[in-house]
Length: 393
Image (tube, rainbow, N blue to C red; front, side, top):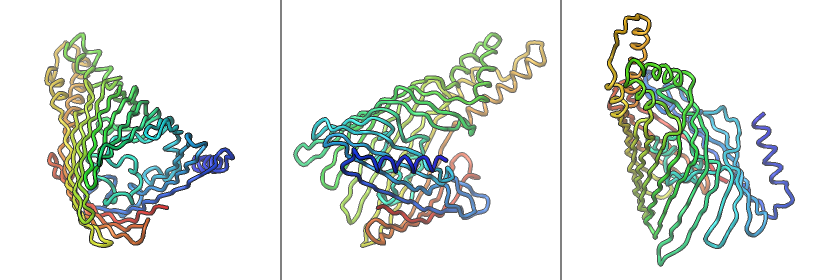
């Protein structure tokens, strides 16, 4: 039903008589992959060859209402969501001047270097961008964005200010939860000159995450505050309820056409919550040899759970109130808190070697091999093979 509604809505948009000029673009990322050992699993893949985790198909329609006003809608079907077509973009843009535009609706929040083309695999050399940096649970936002672009000598620069809110699905210690970001404000700045480009972004939001089981655990732990004073502080420190979150990104690239090199770094923090501080980065390089582009990427992701472990360490591991049920209940809650805090620790890295072959303009074939390493648990190490095709029209 969602697919039918999306298609009919797009058809209505294209048929609207107010649109003097309509542009229709589409893209397809057909990506299959598998791990090379029967006991390995990573990024949604295991040893059974599967197209679902990363395959994406999309259609974008842009219509000009007037010389200054336009509307954009993008319908996307993802293999990870059973290819159900859904509106991921639906916004209008008004040109305030030759250098300034303002957009409102549902749009991509410009968190990363490749945010604007994240779903269009043809626009970059990998089959999928490095998961360490790009593996966020959300990319779109309901709100307003102001874009300013201009030149200064040989430099082209741009500023984007985005504000709004977003809701999406996430996980808390492996358990599904509903993530809500309110009062999102993100400011990015980007410069380009010939073969060099760089950008940075700083964002803040009020972060909440709801899960019935996790919320029940936090509530139960909080009730022990009258018996174990640190329990209340631990409960508050574990909850994710309108906590201040921040996001920082910086990226730079050199592209001399025959060869290129680039890097990107991100840092995420959610104050006073179970979500551990996260840092991630990658470095990538490649050569363009006619239609072939061999490339290699090294990526790292780390999460620091020292604060969460400190909250648990402040509590006694057991209590003796004289009530066996109360003491046993507390012991279960303590062990649960210790387990959740421990799970927030993360130290992973990956090396990806790949080859892109440009069959013709708008169509590329790719193959990537990724060696994934978990420094905390060698059992999670895996080798992943992906092959695929990217197409745009």
